[in-house]
Image (cartoon, rainbow, N blue to C red; front, side, top):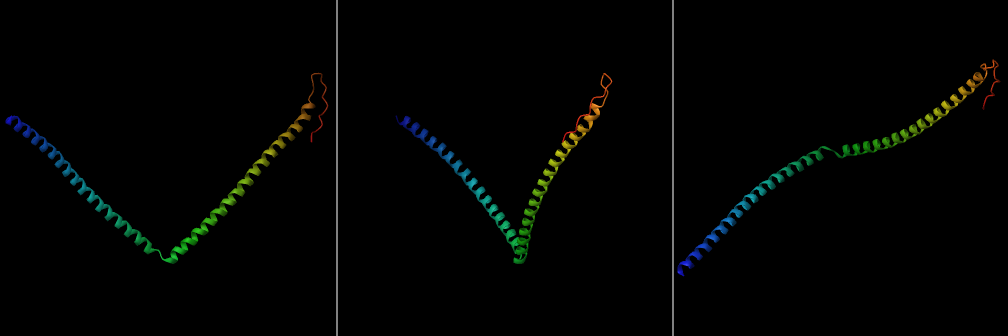
Amino acid sequence: MAEAGDRRTQLLADQDEEREATWRERALNAEDALEAAHGEILAQRTHICELLGQVRDLEAEWTEEAIQRITTENTTLKQRVRQLTADNRTLDERLKAARSNLRFQDRRVADLEAQIAEPMAGNRPTTSGRASSPVTART
């Protein structure tokens, strides 16, 4: 009985040691990860500080007059873009109208050419040798 109790005690002690070793390993891994995270956070903070310093340096280079001048130029350029857009729209409408007029004129020329050609076709000799009467012009 005593021997069985000793074995049971030894078995429980071995299981406790295995669990403790697992937890010890996990704790060491967590400490390593925490240390790496702290290092990364420190590197990120350093980088952020450098970037903020660069922003401050850039802001310091611009005087209030320069900012005002650039703002005025930007406003002027925006107005110019609006004006050019309106001009472009107007010219586009004129181009469409000119193309429409050209198509109309082309049809009119084709009609006139057809009218001129019809009397000539009508004056050709027929199979009987007589010329047909001229066709009156359309208006």
